[in-house]
Amino acid sequence: METNRTIDQELASSMQAMAARAGMRVQIEDLIGQEIGFAVVLASDVVATYRVRGEIAKDQGLTLHGFDGFMVDLERKSGRVAIGSLKVGSITHVILVDPASGELFSWAAIERPSCDE
Image (cartoon, one colour):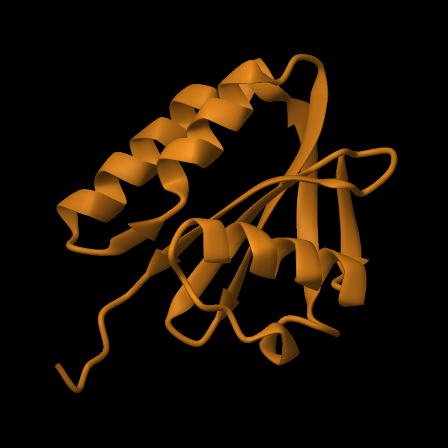
C-alpha cells in the first residue's frame, strides 16, 4: 500500500533533530510543504533492500548520514512501517514513520558530493 504526505512543521522539526544528532545540518525550510510518498510494508520485508541500498551508496562515494542508526531502527521494528524518500537538492532523505500516527521513527540521508568539489 502506498500513501502520500505533505511534510509539516512537526515532521520537519523531528527530521531536523535526528539530522543534528547524526552531525548534519538540515534546513527545515527546504522540507516544509514537500510531498513524500510512503510505501506501507512489513519492516522485516525491506531490511535487506535498505542494507544493500546503503552499500551501493557507499560504493558510489555518496555520504551517508544517520544510516547505521536508521538500519538499527528498521531492524528493531515489527509489523508495518511507512518508508519513503525525498530528494531535496543533493540530499535524499530516507524517512521511516508509523503508518497510523505519522510519528517519525527514524531518518537518514544520502548526500551526493557537490559538482563544484
